[in-house]
Image (cartoon, rainbow over all chains, first blue to last red; front, side, top):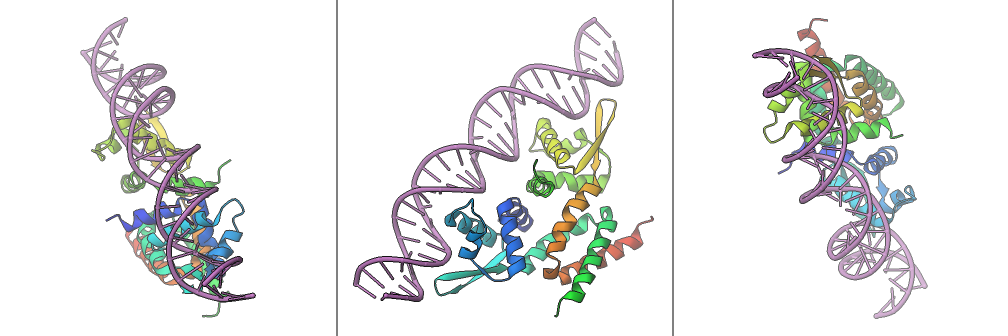
Length: 113
Length: 113
DNA sequence: GAAATATATTACTACTAGGTAATGTATTGA
DNA sequence: TCAATACATTACCTAGTAGTAATATATTTC
């Protein structure tokens, strides 16, 4: 079986898929049609295929709502595949991580939990 | 010109290249020949091509030493391309980030600065 | 139930990218 | 200078993948 990290990075390699993840992060639940509308250069079946790829990598999850399919981020798989990889490089990053942490705390204030 | 994040994720998509980065992170400066020795399934020109790809993505840097080429991580580009991307997903990650931060602090103790 | 909608699936094409082998280019050493 | 070393570059092959169009499957609406 293919490694989870492998799947993750392969999924992230495509700019369209990264953009889809961005949109899902911004909007929370989103239908395929709403996503298609964001990609004038692509046709519905293309987006659907990307969503299948993201689902195979465990990065998204979906629930039916009538004839629509609502997609959302699967944040656990996302974080759990990426974190150990990031950790390996931690020594090379202290400064960047500090900035990230600062951002995290800043955002913490903005959100209601 | 292709986006830096695009280059980054494309570079990270290949498992051989990720392994090369791992090795460079572990060993610091490493020659091409030493890297080749770690990949029994690959031939020297293949590794060289991967190194060129990593260099194009700004992830590694090299200096000549006679007829050898010493490669090392270019941690700045690495962190600066990845951090803003990570930041976008920060809300989806608080827990994982906390673990990462803990790791960072733990490693902090181990290293002498 | 027929038409329309929303998404998934399949078949196909074109391009990309990883791999090797062969060649090129410095550099070291005899 | 000639051979060997270390790496880069090129040409080529092949496999994988992003894209489309066409088809299939539910689901809603008329």
